[in-house]
Length: 246
Image 1 (cartoon, rainbow, N blue to C red):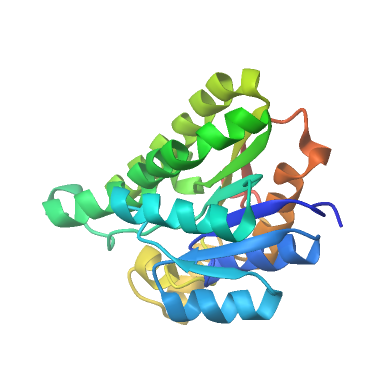
Image 2 (cartoon, rainbow, N blue to C red; image 1 turned 45 degrees about the vertical axis):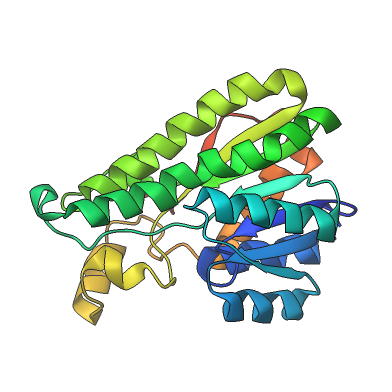
């Protein structure tokens, strides 16, 4: 029960890595708000763990502000925020990604961190405590061709994590990131271009431990970084990648 008495928000919590984090947080005693643009997925996950389901488009200021009010009404003060919601563009040469795709990737993967901070950091400052976790990617550390702007958005998130950590440390707020390799999530096919046994084998061959990241892996790492056990850990981008970035 490492998170007993804590309140937590997990964006993109209805599926994939977010669902793994939600399950782990709930199992460790946290009261969890499952935030997702997919209301049905959020409600199903919240029902599973006894949490609260709220719908939000993290790329839109109005949606985030309304969501923040609803989350505080449901949970009270927020102790933990996990910025997990994310998207990618399909693998293609950088100049072939159209402007709408580019804008959407940076709105969901980057602007969302800013909007969530604007909505929740003042409350954490007032409380003198808090933990923020940004879900980045190995793509931000060891980028692959043809995912250029997705890679860049995750690199942005890692830099944002470090500067947030430095700025917010005097207020008792810790900020860290996770950098998973691809996993069994709704985005896997988009990362690989197409999902075939041959492409999976080739991708997994680049991971020394020989498997994808799982939602359980992410939940375990997130739980540590957001718990009081990590009270001296801030500004790190923890690789949960089976050695992919070595």
